[in-house]
Length: 242
Ligand code: F6R
Image 1: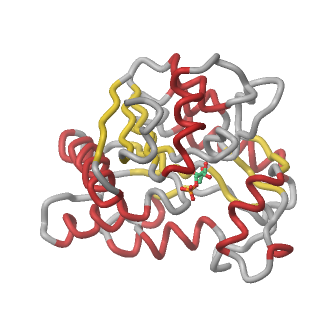
Image 2 (image 1 turned 45 degrees about the horizontal axis):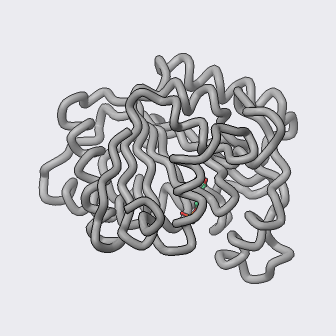
């Protein structure tokens, strides 16, 4: 595991964007696993800036996103498809048909989960997976549980996650209670993992995930077993580590 410390959010974002940029420059056909939430916003805008300068070409890249809320249409402002289109895809030259987000409106959720695993497998797996971390230790929406959930599945979000995500919705009751998430297996099979975290509120869970016992009660703790994990975090999030 490599831990890279950054003085602040902007610097964390730039360092993480540099790693993704190097991946795409070296391997233009890369499959990128992508995350949503507040943490990666700076990474996406940095990548878009470098694309505009002509430094990166995303035309051959494929992407698979970690998760999507159940019940939200792709054009719903809080859906993760909408987030990805507006914060990243529309600002670079990735063909939209190369981008994948679970379908939150699928009638048959189980079939949608199978379809999503098939998409990941047919792309040959993920070359570089970008991850944020939730306050519960979730990665994607793999919430604390008694088992590590392996494949794409639907999940009932914990109250802590619903509360944390309510900041994006008009009313707390608008936050969906269910989501579809990629499983731990696809995440752990990614050739490289890049975990980003910022802010003091992530310090405790980051420490427990990287140095605590490996347990499904802290889903991100499984990352300790990955052989190519890079953590880029600001000093506030790393305050219990160094
Ligand atoms: C989002 C995702 C989540 C977030 C996590 C942290 O696609 O998979 O695991 O990475 O909830 O969210 P932020 O970055 O908003 O703190």
